[in-house]
Image: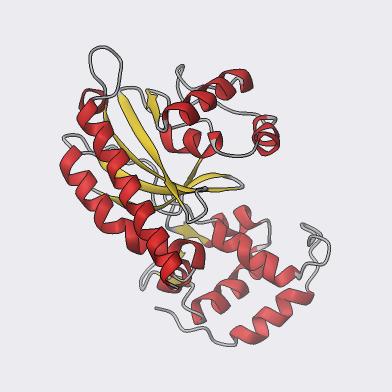
Length: 283
């Protein structure tokens, strides 16, 4: 790992530098906003980036990006290849994510249930919460599936109209918040993705009525998902438990979810809910 020499000086210099390429939001600090844009430049699909790629994604010049990277390296938030010119997120980012209060109890409680669910269904099991940019995966477990479909990494968000868990979380929002989110452009990943607000509202009503969600071919053709809600001590939907796998693993020839798979998903979600509620009342 490269040591940051003069990192603090670099940070202060970058804070006062004006290159005309970006403007801080009202009341924001330019150096902080630039540092966050640099961190957000890294994605599961592109975990290693060159200086030029980082500068382009963060909308800063290379000199500013280099100084910011030196500071972030010194704080263990970024690392650089020992031999090479590429950068990646550091372990400090993992430590920060693990400390987010809203996810700590959820992840700790859910992890063993997700592992069991993945093993029993031979599918990928996920725990997700709703964020402004969509449904974010905060934990997942591998179940030795027959075909490994690499979608929805931890920390990655899916649009609210794609997948069983995102649509379940959308369905349990209040009417005004649903309308606000459905007013945004909703793209399609496959011909089976729901994009019309009216269709998503009807889907949401059905999800609320039956207590679970199903998605077939709407992210990747041939892949399906089932989801059930995790509720907090007040009965509100706090997260979703879901499984994703090849369609024959989860969906019967009649087009309906396989009873065993759906029961396992709903049982896991109910058990996680119960444990979270017990923890709340014990405090």
